[in-house]
Image (cartoon, rainbow, N blue to C red):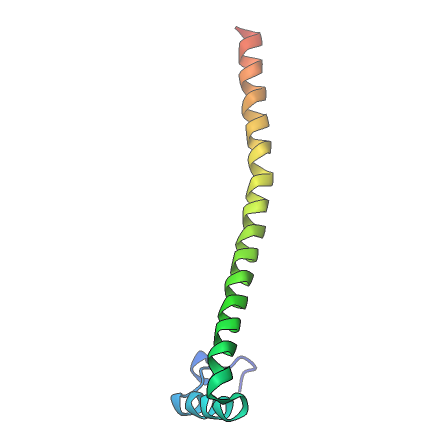
Length: 81
């Protein structure tokens, strides 16, 4: 058997998700569970925004280099004309 499992084995079954939700309801209670879900959602949203911010920063670092190359080429064209 290979070390890599098929993707179907890694996806939890619906009954497993129901059991996990029931245990979470028992542990946190019906009043705390919505607050917990809200905070997890906010955390994921901030993480995604931060990750996208890092990708945007890398693109901004590349753009000035391209602008410098274009301005250098235009300056050289003016000198040769």
